Length: 125
Image (cartoon, rainbow, N blue to C red):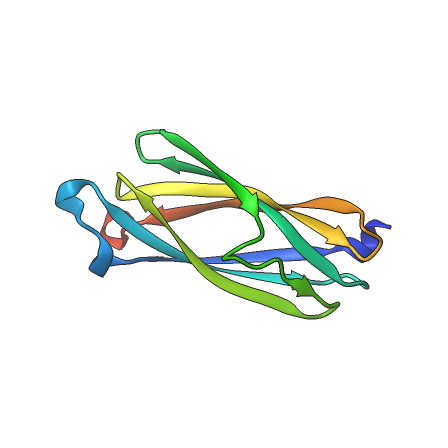
Protein backbone atom coordinates (compact mmCIF):
# COMPACT_ATOMS: atom_id res chain seq x y z
CA UNK A 1 0.00 0.00 0.00
CA UNK A 2 2.74 2.47 0.93
CA UNK A 3 4.22 2.23 -2.56
CA UNK A 4 1.17 4.05 -3.92
CA UNK A 5 1.67 6.90 -1.44
CA UNK A 6 5.10 8.20 -2.32
CA UNK A 7 5.00 11.99 -2.05
CA UNK A 8 8.16 14.12 -2.27
CA UNK A 9 8.39 17.67 -0.89
CA UNK A 10 11.03 20.18 -2.03
CA UNK A 11 11.40 23.63 -0.45
CA UNK A 12 13.15 26.76 -1.69
CA UNK A 13 13.29 29.86 0.53
CA UNK A 14 13.81 33.58 -0.11
CA UNK A 15 14.31 36.60 2.13
CA UNK A 16 11.94 39.41 1.08
CA UNK A 17 13.92 42.53 1.91
CA UNK A 18 11.36 44.87 0.35
CA UNK A 19 8.70 43.83 2.89
CA UNK A 20 11.00 43.50 5.88
CA UNK A 21 11.66 46.12 8.56
CA UNK A 22 14.72 44.91 10.50
CA UNK A 23 14.65 47.99 12.75
CA UNK A 24 11.17 46.85 13.87
CA UNK A 25 12.19 43.17 14.14
CA UNK A 26 10.11 42.21 11.11
CA UNK A 27 11.76 39.77 8.72
CA UNK A 28 9.64 38.49 5.84
CA UNK A 29 10.45 35.22 4.13
CA UNK A 30 8.86 33.51 1.16
CA UNK A 31 9.07 29.82 0.41
CA UNK A 32 8.18 27.89 -2.70
CA UNK A 33 7.14 24.31 -2.16
CA UNK A 34 6.98 21.63 -4.82
CA UNK A 35 4.96 18.54 -3.94
CA UNK A 36 5.63 15.68 -6.32
CA UNK A 37 3.49 12.54 -6.46
CA UNK A 38 5.88 9.64 -7.08
CA UNK A 39 3.20 7.05 -6.34
CA UNK A 40 0.81 5.13 -8.57
CA UNK A 41 -2.47 6.80 -7.58
CA UNK A 42 -3.85 10.31 -7.26
CA UNK A 43 -3.52 12.03 -3.88
CA UNK A 44 -5.15 15.15 -2.48
CA UNK A 45 -3.58 17.57 -0.02
CA UNK A 46 -6.15 18.04 2.75
CA UNK A 47 -4.38 19.78 5.67
CA UNK A 48 -1.10 21.41 6.61
CA UNK A 49 0.78 21.76 9.87
CA UNK A 50 3.78 24.05 10.42
CA UNK A 51 6.08 24.54 13.37
CA UNK A 52 7.91 27.85 12.90
CA UNK A 53 10.83 28.58 15.23
CA UNK A 54 12.54 31.97 15.29
CA UNK A 55 16.18 32.62 16.17
CA UNK A 56 15.29 33.08 19.86
CA UNK A 57 13.64 29.66 20.02
CA UNK A 58 10.08 31.02 20.05
CA UNK A 59 7.74 28.51 18.42
CA UNK A 60 4.55 29.21 16.48
CA UNK A 61 2.23 26.50 15.24
CA UNK A 62 0.08 26.96 12.14
CA UNK A 63 -2.45 24.45 10.93
CA UNK A 64 -5.43 24.43 8.66
CA UNK A 65 -7.06 23.10 5.55
CA UNK A 66 -5.09 22.89 2.33
CA UNK A 67 -2.46 25.39 1.21
CA UNK A 68 -2.95 28.91 -0.19
CA UNK A 69 -6.71 28.33 -0.19
CA UNK A 70 -6.52 25.13 -2.23
CA UNK A 71 -6.73 21.40 -1.62
CA UNK A 72 -4.93 20.28 -4.77
CA UNK A 73 -5.27 16.84 -6.31
CA UNK A 74 -1.97 15.56 -7.64
CA UNK A 75 -1.98 12.82 -10.26
CA UNK A 76 0.76 10.16 -10.36
CA UNK A 77 3.93 11.67 -11.82
CA UNK A 78 2.60 15.24 -11.49
CA UNK A 79 3.59 17.98 -9.11
CA UNK A 80 1.95 20.94 -7.44
CA UNK A 81 3.86 24.10 -6.61
CA UNK A 82 2.90 27.08 -4.49
CA UNK A 83 4.56 30.02 -2.78
CA UNK A 84 3.67 31.32 0.66
CA UNK A 85 5.40 33.27 3.38
CA UNK A 86 6.28 33.68 7.02
CA UNK A 87 7.18 36.67 9.17
CA UNK A 88 9.77 36.28 11.93
CA UNK A 89 11.02 38.67 14.63
CA UNK A 90 14.57 37.44 14.01
CA UNK A 91 16.75 37.33 10.86
CA UNK A 92 17.01 33.55 11.07
CA UNK A 93 14.67 30.70 11.90
CA UNK A 94 13.37 27.33 10.82
CA UNK A 95 10.15 25.75 9.61
CA UNK A 96 9.06 22.13 9.55
CA UNK A 97 5.81 20.26 9.52
CA UNK A 98 3.66 17.89 7.54
CA UNK A 99 0.82 17.61 5.07
CA UNK A 100 -2.17 15.38 5.61
CA UNK A 101 -2.82 13.74 2.25
CA UNK A 102 -5.73 11.58 1.15
CA UNK A 103 -5.40 8.73 -1.31
CA UNK A 104 -8.01 7.75 -3.88
CA UNK A 105 -9.57 5.30 -1.39
CA UNK A 106 -10.23 8.15 1.06
CA UNK A 107 -7.49 7.00 3.44
CA UNK A 108 -5.44 9.78 4.98
CA UNK A 109 -1.69 9.66 5.51
CA UNK A 110 0.97 12.11 6.62
CA UNK A 111 3.77 13.43 4.43
CA UNK A 112 6.56 15.01 6.49
CA UNK A 113 8.11 18.34 5.51
CA UNK A 114 11.74 18.22 6.65
CA UNK A 115 13.09 21.18 8.62
CA UNK A 116 14.31 24.05 6.46
CA UNK A 117 16.05 27.29 7.30
CA UNK A 118 14.78 30.84 6.86
CA UNK A 119 17.69 33.26 6.90
CA UNK A 120 18.68 36.72 5.79
CA UNK A 121 21.60 35.99 3.47
CA UNK A 122 23.95 38.25 5.43
CA UNK A 123 23.34 36.05 8.50
CA UNK A 124 24.87 32.95 6.90
CA UNK A 125 28.57 32.48 7.45
